Length: 301
Image (cartoon, rainbow, N blue to C red; front, side):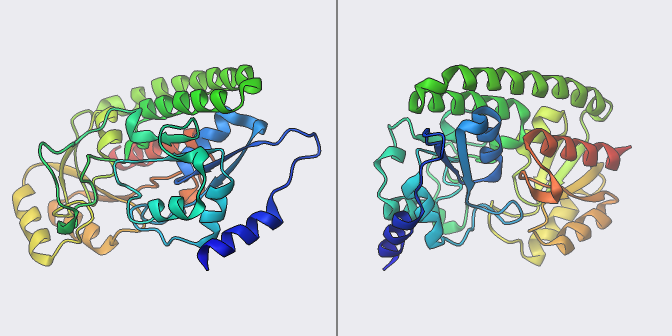
């Protein structure tokens, strides 16, 4: 039934633009990858994103329309390192699209083009609830990785659409220039707070904090993706009491009561941050990092 729905949508929905040049169809698991594809692809690409920027990307409801999008895609971009393991693989199988399978130009696993942090020394059993068994997949919040991903997207688009190579390269240069200018500005603003200690709810801020010069000292979750029990939270507070933690950070889809409790007990500030483009009204990748920096600096000043 699910596959028949896909076929029906494809029969009704695939059209060629009036200019005769079909756009490259990009499907991104997350809005950040979609935003980067738009930066590089410009008007030569049509971008669809799957997960909402205000939901936990580890846990997304698979919709039939997602498989329809994947069946029509020329390029799939996803975080990898099993971030989408619970929902994306079945959709890819249902889509039956050879263009987006591993080894094809239309397959971009972001975890293969950026340096991963927190990779386990041995095997990790997902049955324990750990949703980071291959390392930390939240790579995109480090702007250096944003540029790495944009470069990889450019390479894939050039392989898929050779006629647009010059456009993609020009768009990448422009994006790199604008992002580089902002990175220097952001680092200057963050410099006075180097070494500030931060607790996170989920380990989705590791890459940003490392780039920003801040120090992640603990996470409220006992394992990534495992909700903390009261005893976990109490033990965390006792362990960090007097350590000088200044911020307790989380996204909007995590329990704010846990975040506030820890912050209040440690004399720190609770800070909600947008982790994906589109959250909190952000309109693009650079705008997302700008909002994060603004919030962090504002909380520490």
